[in-house]
Length: 231
Image (cartoon, rainbow, N blue to C red; front, side, top):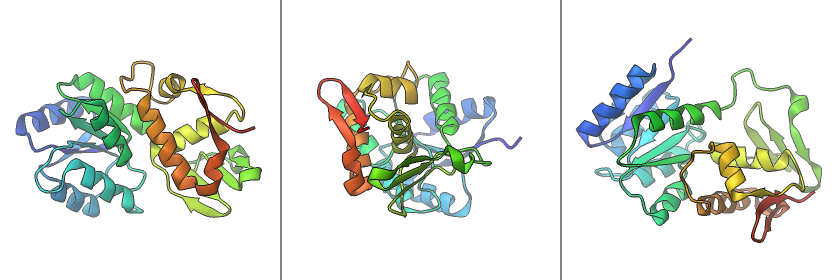
């Protein structure tokens, strides 16, 4: 079986070596970049399965790199795990807003980082996909969700979502009318030990509604509880 390839974008040599060593020890192939510009050049030459991205980099910072990755068709769904010393809630929200799928703060546990990477890879669609019959159709809103193809269409137009946005939409659409609390969304999508604040879920929902346009109105806020897709 092919080993997943991880791109580590980190300008601190010690941290870069620490992350690389633990990833290789855990069975991953690793490519490293010291700057945002180098990371984008490497991505253009060779695909990777996930990226560990420092937020504070020389030249293009992690936020710029993240947005650039999300703007390209070939890398739009690439799992991105931010690894940074910026640990305030606003910093975490800003990282998720620019397209990161996960956020790990320094100092960090290599085992936790690897667990987050593995979780992000598991959320990626299987190569064989799922049968068409397993797609979710929300006819009233013109929305069709294809889990196997990791694809969402609204009135026939493909909507490009991050891995996190897609997983949230799939979760809500699986049980229309069922209310999921912010913590339930975190627990079911990220795992019970995920340390991010529930406010970050609001950021993901905001981005999801914006991308879905008029169809996004089907995602309702249940005040004081969480979110649901209108039955």
